[in-house]
Length: 87
Image (cartoon, rainbow, N blue to C red; front, side, top):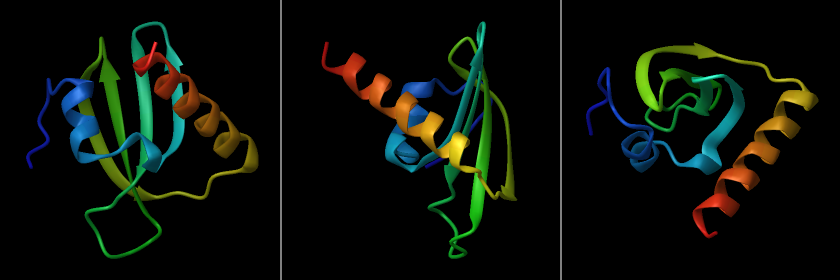
């Protein structure tokens, strides 16, 4: 699968499942999603996507240490997203 600038969030979720989100932030029309990088062998690898208007603007790979509040926020956002898919 190929990730590209302008990729819709729905297509991104076909590669990186929402269950792998480690951190999520949203402000106005911009979103930041940090995923476990399932495409590498190192369990500490993460990939961060920057979206504007629901489309990938950029991404970068890194290692992240997330605090408890960030993990709880990600769980809440995943639950909210999942609920909206079935509404």
